[in-house]
Image 1 (spheres, rainbow, N blue to C red):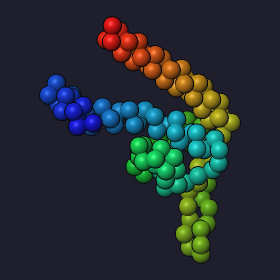
Image 2: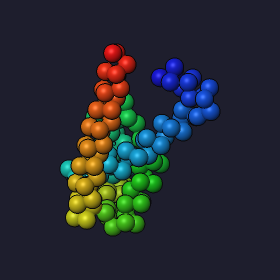
Image 3: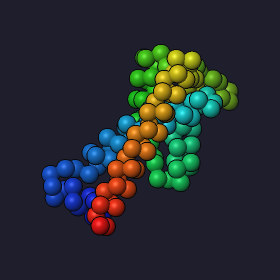
Length: 130
């Protein structure tokens, strides 16, 4: 990553900005995939993503919260307050049917794009080896 970062900085592109764009783009899909399995709260979503990616992907609570707020505004996700302990409440996010349909379409699009990108990288590598 150091060499990639150095390349982007030398060429006028901020590596962290590019990384943040990729992370933000994938955040919605990852959050929806978790909510497709079970209702979850913000910190739990962040923890699941980090643990299941072996630490390769880490979303901040702010990124998670911003993404879920947009999904709530779009009617994909709802929230409910659940009492935890005597005084604390935790906000759980729930995937609605509209959100489940959206997730399935988004996931299929991601799979196709991922496959396409891999094919391009593989093809270019083969051309370079010739």
